[in-house]
Length: 138
Image (cartoon, rainbow, N blue to C red):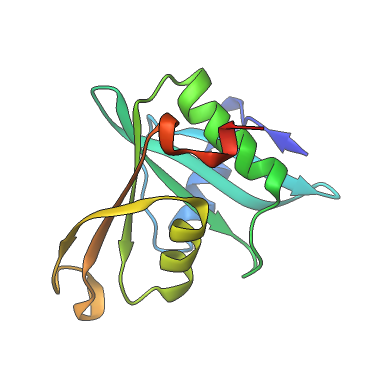
């Protein structure tokens, strides 16, 4: 089940879920949460608003990939509901699973800043537009 958190308590929970994973988002973030049996499994954040763009972040309780229904809902929400023309992902190149996930989702690498992330990793900037998003097609 996909839910949009509402109320102070649910929004605070999302913030804490990200903080426990050393991920920071602002109070302006928009959220989607994928739950199974009442337990959140994936938490999606849309943040870092600039013009018609935003940053997309994804965090989970486990290493398995997100459900296809969540992926489709994520991109429909970002491009359709939030009307973003670009969604960006910023990844540490040493985070191999995040790098693979972004590429599998269809993001394309547009820029890399060598050794600018933690543990001498590169900051890798990924981008996606609605025209490139395969998850909007069906």
